[in-house]
Image 1 (cartoon, one colour):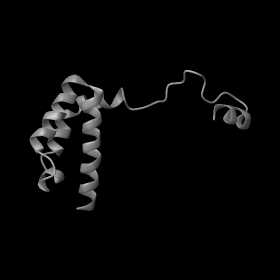
Image 2 (image 1 turned 120 degrees about the vertical axis):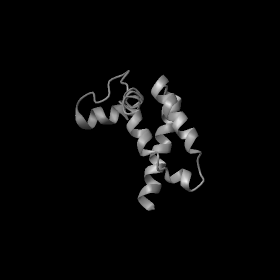
Image 3 (image 1 turned 90 degrees about the vertical axis):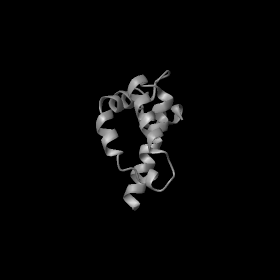
Image 4 (image 1 turned 135 degrees about the vertical axis):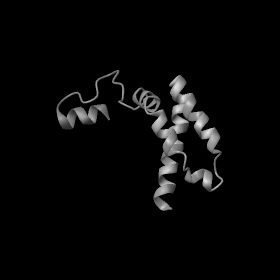
Length: 91
């Protein structure tokens, strides 16, 4: 792919050792910074209302992300927040 892009575009688009930009470093910090706001928004939790998640466990996960800024808990919380948003839009 690198050779194809170089041939078509005439330059090195993705140099060797290029690190793809992700939210890995940004998302935990922003969740931590806005944890109180996220927690207040989760007082009404559509997935908990449907019996699909334990609301206290979600808030505990949020606290874990805010305290540790770890990638694994952040990934789980991000997936939950995405699904929560989808369910709220459908409801």
